[in-house]
Length: 287
Image (tube, rainbow, N blue to C red; front, side):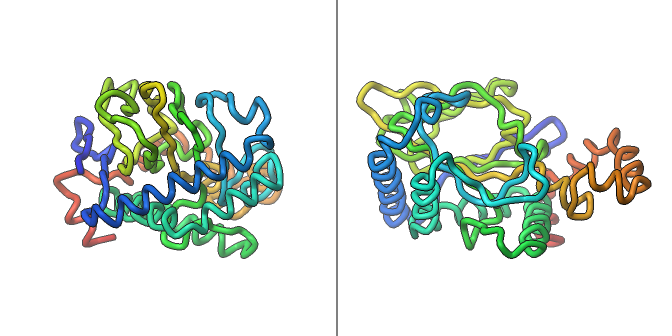
């Protein structure tokens, strides 16, 4: 486990690694990898060309959880292009091995960024409490949404996940059968950092503001990944009183004007959610 901090000692990236119960963790990682591979095979004729070639790379993926955006008026459960894909995503989310992986990433989030974790927790609880039909994918994870990158070579190209919370973290867990010394490294472009990213390891990064991707793996190897995140739209919807900006402007223009007036200094408030390495114990005590 390791952290990457900025010049103010704020933890901005957490390399969480894996649990110390290595043998049982390897079994869960193997099971999750196998389940995702089976899903990819069963859906091989269901994926379109656009499903396997997109801005993050050339591999199929499935999504699950709660999101908000794309012109929607209220938060909704994530859908996939076909019913078969949505059903497969739901089955994967119920898999005990993936439930454990999701829980580990969430616990790592709470450990390295307790204030930011609390912000996620309060928002997701409020949004899902407002509409009981919204289905969180993992019982023991604070993240409201996830993506299963099915591979067989889920090597992402340089990109940013701009729909995620700008100041938030997403969790990425690597799966597959590849030599991490020869490929599959995680690179954080603006930070000019490249790290080994072995199968079974988890990292937490601000994926919306730092360009990231993976180095290629060797021919014949496989790589899959499991990511968890939160759409920035969920935060805004809650801040606007469980409504869109358009509705807020019509119903309470004074509140919207106040929110807009605070925009210039909002980045400072966002930085306040990140813990400084030397103050982490204090943040845990007050969280």
